[in-house]
Amino acid sequence: MRIVLLGKPGAGKGTQGESLAEVLGIPRIVMSDLLKEEVRSGSDLGSLIRSYMDEGKLVPDEVVYEVLERGLTRALRGFILDGFPRNLKQADWLDKFLSSRDSGLDAVLYFDVSDLTVLRRMMGRLVCEICGRTYNVFYDPPEDVRRCVCGGRLYQRSDDCYEKILKRLEVFREETEPLLDYYRARGKLISIDASKDIEEVRRDALNALSKLRDLK
Image (cartoon, helix red, strand yellow):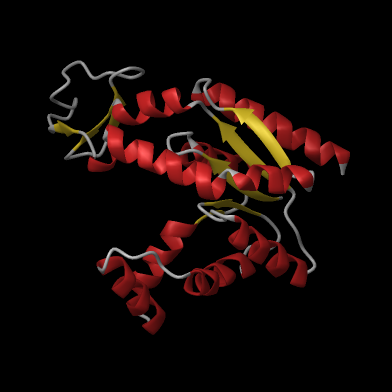
């Protein structure tokens, strides 16, 4: 199956994407990871990407397309794509790329959560500086809000502050939310209630994909 994941920041796309990829036996392609891998490779393209990142600029779409094209070409029989597309222009490129390979998306999973849920999940996150374990003061609190079980200091990521989360939600509404109507009109959108616990969301997503397979 060829699947795209959509959702607000904090909706759980990463967690669910890893799980679905394992169950379905297909690769999970994360756009940000592809760009980082290209940078680490030391290629000319990687150096170009690094120059944009170092200046705090967005990597141009044309560069993103070149990197993603290679990743998708290796996985046309099935993939879970996370972090792309982020807007209608990118969605159009993806459709044309897959169509040119006599392929296409099977489903777009939208992990639906409220803004309030996003705020509670992200503002409540605490990360261990030593082992990297993540806690949440609302859902999975540590015994000591200052220390991890390994003894490492717990801290809040800079991106998890109120103002930055609101900005990311605003960007999602302006750029990514129009994709919901785009894929709904094409009969590809499957909305999943992502406010439930992780296992329930995983089960709902797998059930939806199973029904889709049965229809084919």
